[in-house]
Image (cartoon, rainbow, N blue to C red):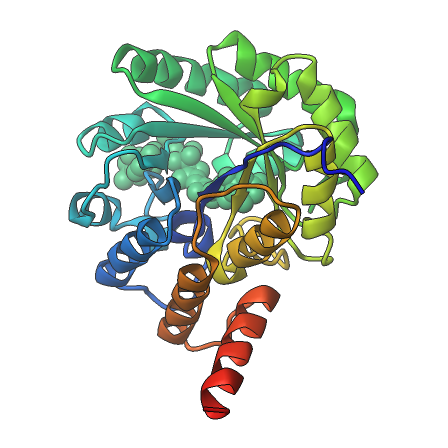
Length: 310
Ligand code: HMG
Ligand code: MG
């Protein structure tokens, strides 16, 4: 069997410090978030989504954004991204010099209202000056597109809505976009249609997959996106995460599981899977629950069995 139709390398953005921890019921100390970033970069992650500059009334878990960004020891070659929903958030983020900012919109009107308290059209009006300011400051701009296959309030989201949002993002100068399955309801063909709609406005090098795993489809969706040539993905160590405004949705696909899949396909990630599994186990222990990564659990069990056998 040939792997010629898969990309030779894949870049992963680990979003666990942001998407992974934004929904935790109990406060997670900034020191733990900082150590998480350090462990991820030591494991070989070259892109990390560290925090968000949103209203602390809306998402209290991210209120320590300055402390976390200022506490991390940056590694050359690693890109540190943060979410900024409006100019107020961007101005706050600018003090901490992220490498990339993320404006986040939705392909569903209802989700846009619930998540950022405005319509899709209003969100684009808010993002436009943020994008302009970021690009003037030499900071890269990504656009997250939520609910590209399904919405917790509206149900199925047609690809045309995704195409429309991608066009609006492109028009204001967003450089690359995430096709996000916020509530993890997507299946491979639906995800491929959402990517296809995005391809009308962004080329394949500027599209990433962001798949939550609620229905256990995120790895299948990753494979479906890889088959289209997508080579940028977001994932979360230990499968942490969820959006406070998408109740019932579980975390992102686990970074360990994606790396296991990619290495199995002979695709280069630059990531040390054993170190990553340790990181997943470490953060899960801090949060007081087992890791959500199947590959992480299997690797740790295999290691424990090997040590027991010595
Ligand atoms: P709003 O209430 O409409 O904002 O919230 P406003 O402009 O009317 O201001 C109201 C108050 O918020 C004011 O304070 C502002 O100063 C303050 P007050 O005068 O009442 O004391 N405020 C801010 N404070 C800090 N940082 C800011 C900021 N902006 C205003 N940036 C807003 C609008 C967007 C701020 C709010 O709705 C919000 O913070 N939403 C955050 C939602 C969020 O973080 N969701 C999770 C991330 S998205 C996600 O997880 C999806 C993703 O993973 C992809 C996927 O899976 O789909 C990316
Ligand atoms: Mg998400």
